[in-house]
Image (cartoon, rainbow, N blue to C red; front, side):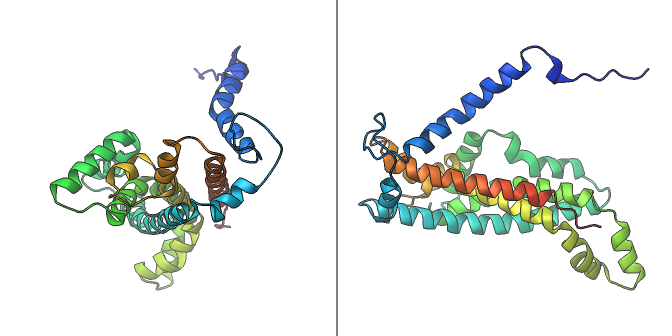
Length: 269
């Protein structure tokens, strides 16, 4: 018997629940964005549109602190994304093109573990690990933790891309006397590039936006943008914090959008 197909959209209340979820998720972001353009120093009084809080981020009394935090965030995010994407490429090649081997399921579970374990647990475990080996906390501990955490985010789009590429391309190359290495670097790797770029962008934005793990493993005096924003918020919410948050949100949206469209690119034709 054919299994009946159910359309979840046909259930009563589906649209209302969807709209409610969207409002709960995105209304705070919209409010923060709107009030970042408020000319008033108060976060509750609207006095007109102004860009002075964005200028304050770059030229105000706290600008040096935020510039240093932004520099740390981007250096860590670019490095972590590059290393985690490289590891993800080799891991995907072994998992997808390596055939069946012992502990294949276990290996996939280990790669996916950071996605399944609550981030706070990962943060505490990472902190305990660094303390147990006597590793001084600082930029390097943040970088190592971010690399480990970003690997599955880079792996998933790369793996999905590789699974969509038939192995006949590599076989045809080797039939034309290409070595396995040449078939990989000249045939498979270019075909995987949309997935690699998508994985890199996702890993970059996950590292850039991370707060929980960073806050646990960072050393004294080391700040990234999320931890600097958190520290400033503890002293009171100011409009310049909303401006920084809006810019960070904009970068995240742009990166995720680029990652989405790049992952849809089909260069196998």
